[in-house]
Image 1 (cartoon, helix red, strand yellow):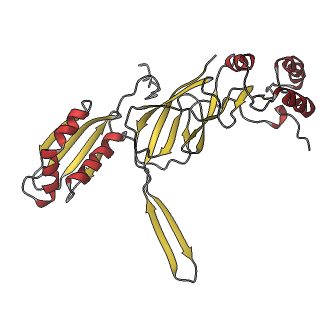
Image 2 (cartoon, each protein chain N blue to C red):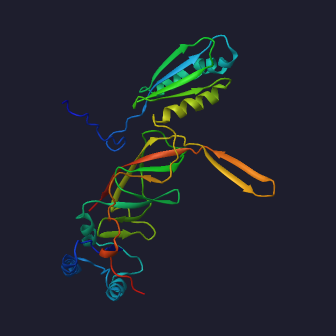
Image 3 (cartoon, helix red, strand yellow):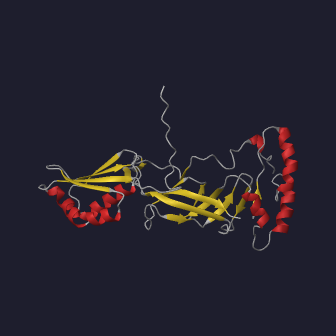
Length: 171
Length: 135
C-alpha cells in the first residue's frame, strides 16, 4: 500500500500551486479524507499490493528511509546509520546482515507500508557488524523512604553496533 | 598560512569494513602467582587467536614484578588496558575478545537506538506546512 505525504513548500502561494499539480501525481490525497476513503476502498483488496507505477514513484525520489524490525524492535534507519542493539551472540565482526523484516519503506513524499512487512522484492537493505562494545555502567537506585529499603543495581550492557551499508529501492 | 587539516568522514562498514583493533600487547611476570593463568593462556590459546586474527599484531613481553596486563591499541590512536591478575585462561580469553571487538572509543551510554548524521528524509514537521487538523 502506497501512502503519500503533503509536500512541504515555502510560502502560501507556492503551496496552492503545488496542491493543484501534486494532486494529479498523488494516489491518496492527504488533504481530503473523502477521496482517500474512496480511493482506498477501490484499490484495496484482500491482499494490498504495490503496483509497478507506484513503485516507480518511490524510485524517482532521492533519499529513502526504512523502519526495520530487528529482534521485535523497530529502528528507523537511513543509509550510513549506526544501529545500537543488545549483543547478538551468533555474529562476528565484519559479518553482513540482510534485513528482511521491513515495516515501512519511504521517502520524502511516498511510503510503502508493509502488512505486516514490505515484500523483499522492493528493497535491498544490508548492515555490517562494526563493533561489539561494552557500555558504561548503568546504576538503578531504588528506595522506599522510612522503610529502611534501598537497593543499587549495576549493569554494564553489552551491545552490537551495525552500520547500514546499503539501503536501496529496487524497480 | 598552511592549509588546515581536513579530516575525512569515516563510515566504517559502508564500503569496506576495517577492524579497529590494531595491536594487543600481553605483559606477564614469570615469577609471581597472579600471572599463572596468563602464562597458561599464552601457552595454550594465544597462537590460535593470533592465527585467526591476522590483522591484529600480537606482542608478548615479560614485565617482571607486575600484575599481568593486556593492552589493546586501536586505529584512532587510543588504547585500552585490562589487568588480568589471578584470572583463569577462559576468563582471559573473554577479555581478549572484548578488546578485539571494541574500537578505541570510550565506553559510553547509548541513549538512542540509531546514531545518524544524515538529515531527516521527510523533513522536520512545521505547523505552517501541514494539512490542518480535522475532527
